[in-house]
Length: 181
Ligand code: GDP
Image (tube, rainbow, N blue to C red; front, side):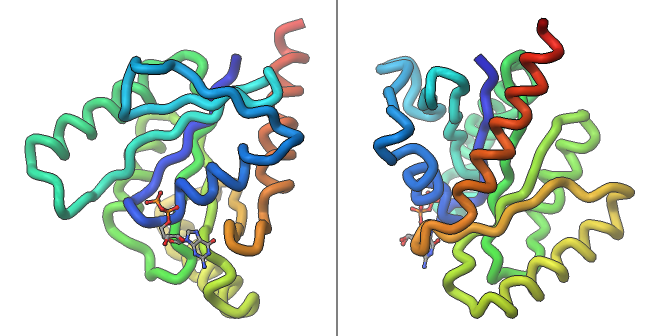
């Protein structure tokens, strides 16, 4: 099954977003690879795809060795996992573009990894301000990229962005099925 991975700096709202995307009666969530690894968790959604929870990057509290080990695990997953279909990079919509995120996306681009952006915690700003921030972010990306990645604006608090993200995943899954047949 195709896999869609979610990643971001710690505290960006990844767990809340994953809960919003999976914990609804409609999406019978089955837990995954028990005991296999505590660092990467898989959630099967609708028997159609896996949501993959990757560890957060840039923990200040982790030691250097630990950071390097986690970075290696993330890199191996992203570069070598055949089923990995799209990576969602989570960005807190309140923050100025952060070097660590920009460098991470640059690395994805260099390695040809398909990714999209999810701007999180939109409810913490007025909707006008959230859109302004997102546009500012996209302008910053446009300095580096010829083509901007698909993006979504979400709030796990207000449960917004959920359908857009799930529809996007479904549309990729449908095109994969057509390619296969
Ligand atoms: P993670 O470390 O990336 O998994 O982040 P969490 O999902 O644990 O969220 C970090 C903090 O941000 C928690 O206190 C959440 O309650 C809060 N949070 C996450 N998403 C939202 C959101 O959409 N809106 C608001 N207002 N708070 C959020």
